[in-house]
Image (cartoon, rainbow over all chains, first blue to last red; front, side, top):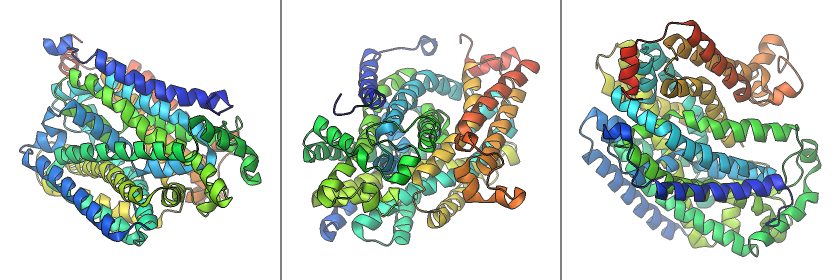
Length: 40
Length: 529
């Protein structure tokens, strides 16, 4: 995959991209999150 | 070498913007809280960029990028760890609790947070001492990275480069405190992001596309030098042979040591206390993840791919082009493969990367000595000469870092970083995790964990882990042999031994000792936690 034969490497490559995208999605979803403890 | 006039103008503009950000920080710094934790109202975007820029230094780009050039893409696991653990877990799980407890206990430094949670000035003082003694090793690694690039790209003498970088950074840290550090970090972070993005696009374009570039690198596996193959090197797009010396260094020292160690970095954890609410921390995840990806992901991929470029153009591997010094691989690649205008820009990127990390280290080492060690431990909370001692502390630790930058051996950047991250993981992580997640953890448990983590880690470095033990020579001098034991254990990083020991001790001693009063736990965690 992607010119890389070893699955241990392309998995790391894809996980790196995936986790960066995951951070974006998490940030957007929780953009207006209010912590109930802080609300108190 | 980049045209000196263009570079001169670029550096001047960069320094003017840096000074402006430093001045902004100075202007907004009116109290101790401002100097220490940015007044606890820092914008989430500034937090994310500042955290990322302080986290990612020349050490990551030059040192670990060079490591990728020599040993291949296995280090991409560290990219994943840096994003998942270093950003996601750090901000979401550790960040909000750290911030809340910091406010509840009015703590302004990382050692103070832990010290107050466990009602122990010893913990605060000892942690401060540990930072003051060992952070200079990491700081010198960062300095070496910045100075090596100035040496290669600008032809400025290495020793002069070290001094230039140090003096500029020290000036705005001492004047403007953490706000100046964070504002300049954010500006430098933005610059780093653009620089690394361009580097990625240019590299893949030059090598014919993503898959094509990787394929070309895969095809070079037969060129692995015999000596490296014996150590476990199997090619640049495959993991080293399982259990080989290269595998152990990669997995235990680099991927786990740096990947997990980041959670207990005092200069990073203190940033969680700078924002006003958990919402800011959650928002910061959005920019933090992609930022780290663009920094380390690009550096490691480009580092590995530099082999394809050098084979195509000079018929040599990167490590040979760099004369055997892995710290020179990235500078050599940028200088040879990139257009001149980009060399100038990348020079600024690296200067920014070095300065943003150095500034947070200087600030942290100074407060560790002035606030944690002097004011809280020695003076028992009395202010005394805290401000002068902090500034003196900054100056002293800077001098030590500079001296280390002169005397440490070549190719040390990645290792110096890993040593510090490993030590902090063993000494601080179990205690810090227990402090914010486990109400039953006691002062005695924390102290035992801190001491066992610190000394077992140092013992392993000095007497067992071959790379450091041999270089230090203490084991040889005392026992007449390079390491106390032989075989695979000498390849296992201290973090894998010292951190579990430290966790175990924390749990056992805590369960055997009297818990803190209910009132104190409520004060730390808040009533509803």
